[in-house]
Image 1 (cartoon, rainbow, N blue to C red):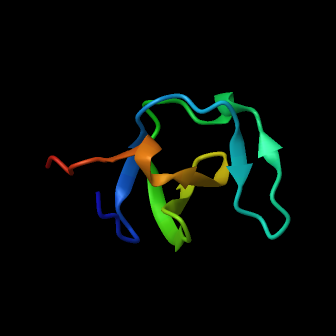
Image 2 (image 1 turned 90 degrees about the vertical axis):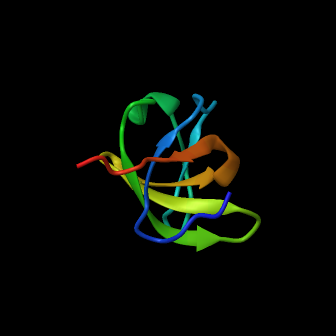
Image 3 (image 1 turned 180 degrees about the vertical axis):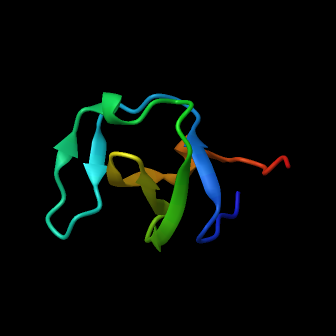
Length: 73
C-alpha cells in the first residue's frame, strides 16, 4: 500500500509497544494510541516505517500495521 505525507491513518491491530519518533527513541506502552484514534502521517522513514502524529505524540509505526482512512464529508 502506498502512503503519503498528510494522509489520515489508524492502527489496524494493537502493537506490543510504541516507539517514539524522537531523536533518541523510547519504547512506550501501547495503550497511548487506541485502535479508533486518527493519526496523520508526518514522515516516511526507511523500510516502510512511517512517522505518525497521534494525540499523545509522534510514533514510528510499520506501514503494514496502518490503514488509510477515507474522508467522508
